[in-house]
Length: 130
Image 1 (tube, rainbow, N blue to C red):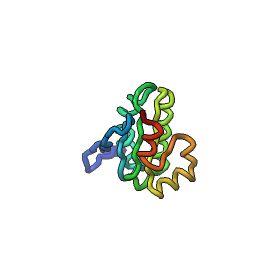
Image 2: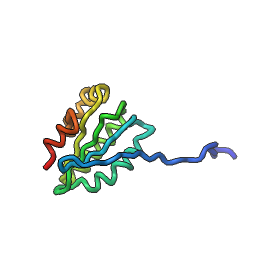
Image 3: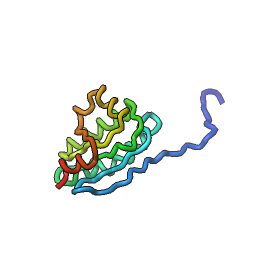
Image 4: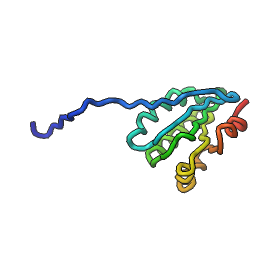
């Protein structure tokens, strides 16, 4: 069969779990692991319901990045699109608790100018919460 590729594996859609909690009227989603080419689609799928509810008048959304060990340009793109969506809906969307390597990527790319970034989840909730 010329020109047709038959994979030897079954495609399995990856799903990223983002445990949620509430702190001072802020929805906090815990993100962990790596956000790169391999996980970006699953990250986007997991973010979708949070972004749908991230509208003016609703609770702010903070991503707890204390468990994220690496983020690539693909992950930054996901965050940029998420931030744009939240802004277009008049919602509040922020990042908190980045590890040093991730914080360095944000600093080099000047990504902290695109979305609010906080040292800790508690600091974000104090500023954004009710």
